[in-house]
Length: 122
Image (cartoon, rainbow, N blue to C red):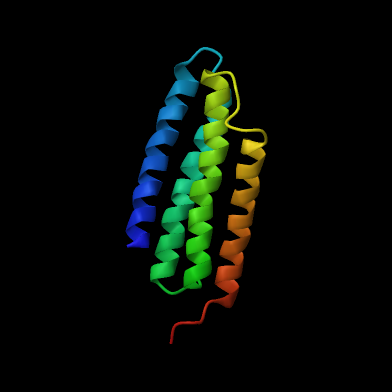
């Protein structure tokens, strides 16, 4: 069930990333949205990769799921903050984008750890 939910969230993140890319390309002075778009698109793909690796037993299950959830939370904080700054003129909360970036970095390190401690398939 968690895998399907994360796949669905990755799909929503991808759609939001494409929408922000279009807004960045066509909007006047919307260049800040390009990095938000990239973070959403890249980490949506990362979630799908983690789920694929989990189902093949190449990542430790619990740590891999934590990493995938971290990608969702981190990208949402980062992209949400940049989008609010662009359209509303204020931040999501102080240090939201750096917090999101830190969560994404920690999630990538969790993927590394999940690969190291995974039990090999026979």
